[in-house]
Length: 417
Image 1 (cartoon, rainbow, N blue to C red):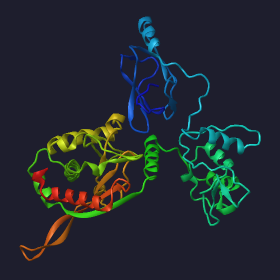
Image 2 (image 1 turned 135 degrees about the horizontal axis):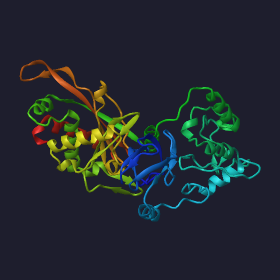
Image 3 (image 1 turned 90 degrees about the vertical axis):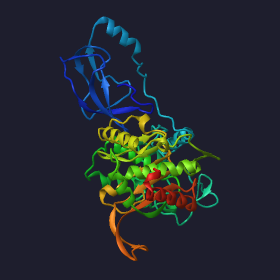
Image 4 (image 1 turned 180 degrees about the horizontal axis):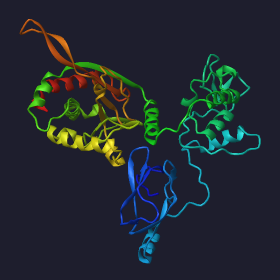
């Protein structure tokens, strides 16, 4: 299994195109694998004959795992052997930055024999030490409210058990604790696990897992949404004159790019005590891909014409639906556009990606009566709702409102796009 992405640790086999005895060329794609970001191809290291395939469809393999063997010439085999990654010896525990020592302590506290559980990076639970019996009910030296309910306070034993099962606090948010001040006890957790044991369950796809993780990380920020109605008549009239014909979402993307070019601080990321501004207006486009969403990024959207945006967008959508978008194609955006109007939705509150500050949503266009001062009567207008979801740490309602207002102004005069 090759390292197909910088953050890739493992991948799931989707399709195997060859069988033992087949002759293959060098760099021929023989296996398709799925990561949490895309479907990619595994190619042969050299020409030869497929001797054996160890991998199985739907099996998940770590980077460096042997998927199969190619019977090749001695020269090719020797050359490939020099580049083959070394297999790690023994088991290597994943490090949880800043929590490794606490997690180890929690695991020991939860087991009288002092055995350790392996802690995964997905464990995003707060550090809670054993409750002290002095000075009232305390956790980690901090007071625990007597009225606390649900899974807010967890014992080291519960946390160790969750780490063993790779559960996060969000997974047990609905468990009502029976312990002191509403703590979830090990009995509560085991009863919960017993209740769901008989229910229908299946392993989510890699992309679904990736989306879930991204949304969990996004929700750690204070997010807000503002909305505004916009007439699409100017856009639809302008679209008839263009070839290729951009969709309304691309007009919105272009308008957002130009608005951000005027006020780049609106999309700044707040990291520590600094507001980080991107040197380029790179905007993503949300595309439905199987069981999840992929967001390929269009670079320098403020400097790209609508015609070029249409060409790039068509290519990226095709790649996204085939899950052929690479990690590099989805990285580095400062904002995204989501056209949820294609599902017949009028309004929504889409969530920005963890590394982005803004997400512009476009609702369905519908004919609505609008008063015309010129005709002194109501006239039909194709109208849609625009929403702007944003990280409230970086942007206030006033700034978000002005940015959205500027987007609607640009859409009302497509000649400026």
